[in-house]
Image (cartoon, rainbow, N blue to C red; front, side):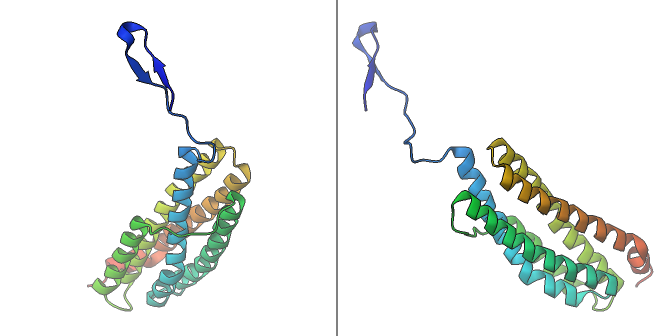
Length: 187
């Protein structure tokens, strides 16, 4: 590496380091890492949602979870399109946040009575925690994609963001229409 010479007392200081041409910008590397993270999370949900659907007492809640399972499968495929647009092989990186949220959901099932509205309240709570995590993630990723000039990827991520917001609104509606009130009367 060439050194720049300081004219004071003959001291030399290193020239600024240049990034090798083949290295991705740090923001793009970060972005790809976060895509791997949410890809793992979505794949995890395709295994977790059927358990929550089966545990739900309310047919409306079970139907909503089943519908969102199909949407989640679409999210996995959409993320695979993102990898393709990035010129990368789809690769999952364990998402510690989703792992924690899904474990919490499993403990809610263990701690609530089967067939109770209280269990349904817990399922909705756990599901909305998932949705809020996904909303935050997809919102940030869509913005980063725009910043990086990846408009096609930003559009795909924005589609998923809209679907996650819709799922959250559906869960709120189900909770507000009887489940919370039914649970408040359980002993």
